[in-house]
Each structure stands twice: as structure tokens, then as C-alpha cells.
Length: 488
Image (cartoon, one colour):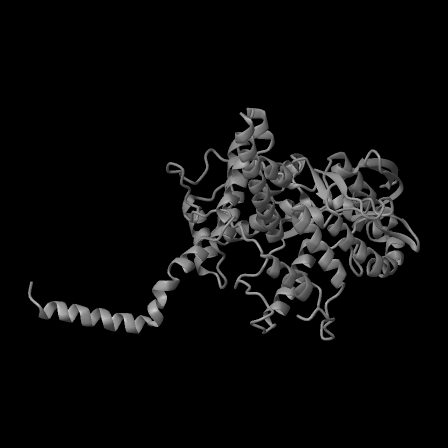
């Protein structure tokens, strides 16, 4: 079995290879409303393998993102189907023992076993596929016997949210030393070989000061930051939805310092990147959304895409569409995305991960116990910047709420509406776009580090009157021996 992905552009770029079949293939894709990047699993005779392909199509019709979600699902399903094929089984005939054996092969037997979190995500996909097959009559029942709330595919691990945040010193170290290629003294490190340090620093500042997820800030467009329209010192707000998790709508506030950092990248590094893309974009203009008009007041743009004049609202533009959106710049066509690369219209998540890992490797080579902050053993994630934003904002709002509560008590009773309007948890929940305030509630446990208090409490125990543990133990033994020698 092999895995392929739908691509209209591939057919349109090489018409000589497909002749009349290519045009008919594109027509059928449009007729069936099959999106680009839709996964297709085929057998040795290039026939679609069912029911996997029908499930992918079903999820695409539900609006699942082909670029990220369906691609991830496709590799999981392909891996499972190949495992079942070796046992002479298919998805429709797989028994519980087959699936339990697959779980064991993934978390125990393979050369690099997956962790509990990764496996639980994979098991969730498999369970969803099996439930869909039962609902469509492709199986009478699921092969998995649910006992209470447990499931045979579950790893059995119970875990809380992995909330990690940075101190100010750690963030500056990550941004300036790791991403920016500076020395601890604030000078340019001549040995730094990273590309576009201003772009990486601007991305980190934007993620930290807005609380946006990596997919949200990495796909932001120039008009959303009012580039070329706002005056110096102005702030920006824009609506976010299509790029947000669960497509949940919210308004993003971008402070001045974040915009200053982005403007530095736009002025110093981005023009050279955009100029290097002009010829590539001119050759690919048929597959691009070429913008001819931007309406800043309504948050819309108009342009030509797939041979037709189209109009889109910024907040409704998916990451896939943003990646192919361009406009006429000083040197010719250039991407409308803020964060572009050398040879790419918009940096992908894998590119950002590579930048992050390189920054981490650089940070770990710095040896300075005085100037360099302590960093954890586990790599920072860009998502940790969102956690840092949430915790710092929550801490500030809670202190403000406590001050307000004291003033209200002195002045008189406050209304229920006022308590709700000024509730720090609800404010942060709305700002982050959480589906439920219960998710934001998890952050309360991380406002202060309890282990710091443990360290302070037992500091005197560790060295009482200058004694070491050995001294205390010897004195204790002497007391005990003396106690045994003296009968009661």
C-alpha cells in the first residue's frame, strides 16, 4: 500500500504528462468537492483502499484540515493497515487481539517505542475510525470491548495539562541567544550560522505578547498587522478564527513592542527574502491567490484564484489558503504572509521546529553560571510562550482583582455582573480562546512554584548550625546510644 495526496497544481503544472486526463481529473475533484492535500491510500494496482479513503473524504466534508489533521490521520491508518495485512486481516475483520498486538508493537516492541501521550493520540484516531465503520454498517460492532470507561487501546496513563512557562531571564536567553545569535554580552556572535535571526525573534515576541498558538502567529498576514497603514506607536487588533483551534473566534490584541519587533524583521530581512521569490511566484501564479485589493476597514481582500475573481475575509482564510496568497510588491509578486523564508512562501511547522531545536542546541552550549539562566532538561516549545503569556496575564489580573475587591468592600456591595466582568479566569479564557474556563483553571496551579517553598522550608534542615547531614547523623547516633545505656 502507498499513500498519496490530492494536488491539482501538480496536474496543472505538467499538462504534457496528463494530456486530456488531467483536465478531467481536476473536473472530477471539483465536482466531488475533494480538497487539495486529501490523503488517498492505494493498493499495488493503484486502486483506492477502502474504507480508509471514504473515511478521509468524510472527515474532509466535516471541515477537518487536510494539511495537518488528515495527513496525521493518514499515516496512522496506513501503519495500522500494513500491520493488519501482515496478520492476514483488514480493518473490517480485525479482532481485539490484533489491535492489542498492534498497541504492544508500538509502545514496546519497535526499535523506538512511542510514549504514552503519542500512543493515546493514535489510539483515539483508531477508535474514531472503528466507530465510524460501525455507524456506516461496515462492521457489526467494534472489536474493542469497553469495560466501564476504559478501553483496551488506552495506555492507562493519567496526565494533567503539560503547562510549562519561562521566566523573564529564560525568555530573553531563548530569544536573544538561542534564536537571535547573540553573545551573553549582547554582541553579535560571529560563529552564529542561523538564518534570519530578526524573523525568529519577532515570531517569539509575537507569540509571547499575544498568547497565540504557533499555527496562529506563523500564518498571520501583513494586512492583519496593518503593515504600511498604522502609524508609529499604534497597536493592532484583528479577528482570528480559521487558523484557531476548533475554529473558535476571538480577537487578538498585538501590543506596540511586538509590532516593533515585527517591523524590524520587515525592514531588515524580509525584503531580500521576498525578492528571491519573485521568479518562483511568477511561474506558479496560476495556483496562487493574487490579491488586487485590500479592504482594511472590513478585513477583506479581493484577488484572482483558480481563474476566477474571489473575495475573502481574513479571519475565514485557512492556513492552506494563506500559504498561497500573494500580492504585488516593489519587486513583483511577493507573499502576503508575514513570516516567509528563503525559497518558501510561508514557513511550515517543521521549519519552525527546526529553528527551535537549533536555538536549543545553541543555548545548551553556553557555559556561564553567572550570566546564563538555568534551563530545563526538556526543550522549550513555542507553545510554552503561550503558557507564559497566560500565567503572567493571570497573575497580573488576579492582583488587580484583589485590589479592586478591597476597594469594593470599603465602598459597598458589588454586583454579580461586575464579579463576572472582572473575573481574571474568564478574561484570560476569552483572550486565549479556550473552549472552557475549566482549561484556564489549570493554570492556577502554576502561578507560583511550590518546590521553591519546599526548598526554603528545608534550607535550615540541610545545614543546621553549619552541620552537614553526616554531622547530624553522628550526633543522633550518639544520643541514641546514650539513651540505650541509661535505663528508664
